[in-house]
Length: 457
Image 1: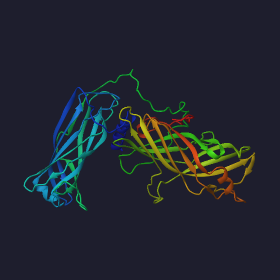
Image 2 (image 1 turned 90 degrees about the horizontal axis):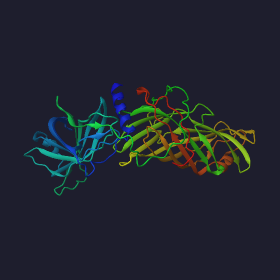
Image 3 (image 1 turned 45 degrees about the vertical axis):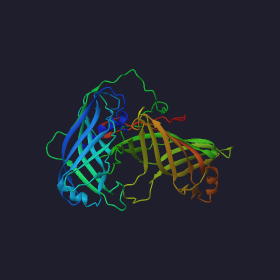
Image 4 (image 1 turned 90 degrees about the vertical axis):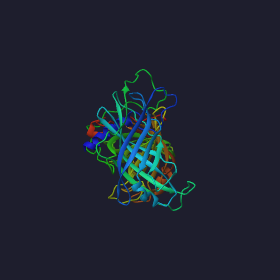
């Protein structure tokens, strides 16, 4: 847990202050420092043999950085020298030359907090293979910047290296049905793995951003209580995922009834919690979410324009794809992509929800729709929005189709009534996400229920 905690604290810093986005050192930068580190790695090849491999990492880093602003390295080159003893592994591919990709794991550390940052965009040109000498492959590419939370040196260090090679023909073209060679490499022995150290000074407090994300609406409501025990219990498949939880609120329009219902209404019942897991990506953050209970709301509509009808709606999450009910499945996804200039994140969400109708009253008289009046299929919901960052929360919205209902009516078939008055396309859904509570680090805890945004984002 200590390893995950260190990573997650770093991830909170990275996501919370602009996150990791792709890019390179801007042209016209006056001062820069050149990084040049010669390192030794032990690489394990597919045959099971291990060889010592030299790796020279070169790149340009800013001379200094500013707290709260991205530190953007320039283009990086990792020159990998494969010794002559390992060449049979390469020549067995059968190509006159090889080309490949390299993924160098690095760590950005500031004031004792470390964040892993993968440099996975490094590619090599087609390089001739000779049986008489070692093979040097120059893998280069742009790497993600990191936004420091405060002042102090931001230090970049090298970690494991993954190398993939593909054979090429005499003209450098890809060979049909060719096999790849993958080598997993780790730093050898006790060596200094530091690539660069960037001093970070205090940021300016008077200069506002030139662009802003849409506001999420009024201030958050009072917290429903302390941090719920379910918070953070949805965990990822590896330690790369950081667990947390949020509350969300919103509105869902029912187009045919020309009205809206409150989503996750605290007046009806205790609001449902949403568990989230986060992973830093090259462009922002990847998020998976799962509700711990159905989202409930109760609303009154004028059915057919003149008859007041009150009903409770329950939205229960379904897996995005069929799978083993007892195994891990994706229930909801969020992808956050940061704008290189403003830091504002564009967020896309996808989930599937089964909709149930119950406790129906028409003009004050109960209408027994039965215990299983729900949509025959799950509603496929895709939402988009912009926000400062997904950990702070914001607004996403989109339109969706309410599928046809089945199983409605205890003594009579009420499916036609529900399908005629509720089911159909063009229903607006606007969701406001609160700030993420990270329970083990006690960040933004307990989670608070945000007020739903009533205006478009």
